[in-house]
Length: 205
Ligand SMILES: [Zn+2]
Image 1 (cartoon, protein in one colour):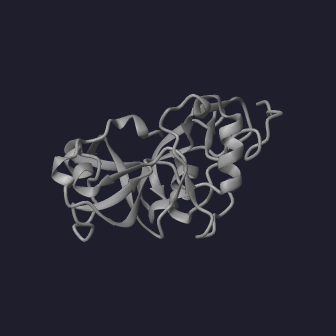
Image 2 (cartoon, rainbow, N blue to C red):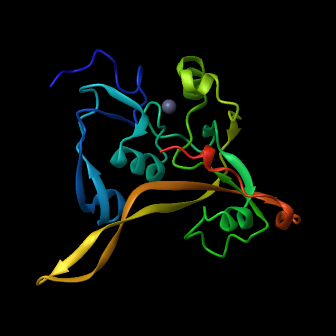
Image 3 (cartoon, helix red, strand yellow):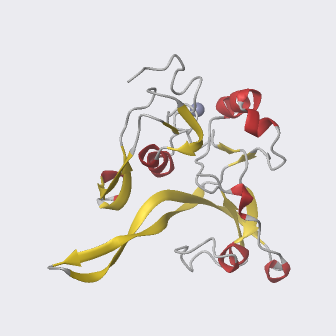
């Protein structure tokens, strides 16, 4: 396999998947406390970068450990920025089916920042990606904002193939793919019931 001349975390975002990183199936994954997750080979920098796809394991690590998806380094609390996240009342997110698993502690009128599957970046990495990424350059949704001090992590699930024991189908298991990140702001929107759900466009994986 061919090592690319492109450098991971410099020329290509750290979280981006490469063609030499095939998905190898469902395994208990340490990134999600050993729960069944879709697992992918780790071989960043080999083959070609797949800019429209994130690596499953690295994506989960960025969200769980607040690693910058661009450079892969941790973001300190005072240097976390989102590029295409959207502010929306939690109730609207729930109504649009985009907040399964968000605890009721986060009330419907609470404004949250739906970051989709994209962990916050360093400010310097935001500037760099806006300058170099052809998709972001033309994306009308780009709106650089600081990421809130509180957040929730929600697993995005797919149902995997049936579980068979002794030749009998005993059920299917829900498998974690990516992790969704929801920032929790201090803002309350009392008119949340009159707001429309967002399009799913802001979500990338
Ligand atoms: Zn960074």
